[in-house]
Image (cartoon, rainbow, N blue to C red; front, side):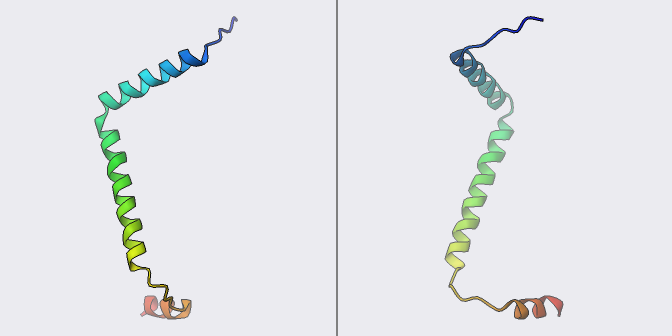
Length: 67
């Protein structure tokens, strides 16, 4: 069995073509990825905004969860 090498530039071009093909044929994948990224950013911003630096003891949290 003969093995054939592929140059770095050929591999780069093949990967580029494959990525473009997937993104044009499956736009839902890109939309989902962007949507998830935006939601992650919003969650991070909300967490930063709500962080007051005041923390409740674990026992207090557990007692409220068990009620």
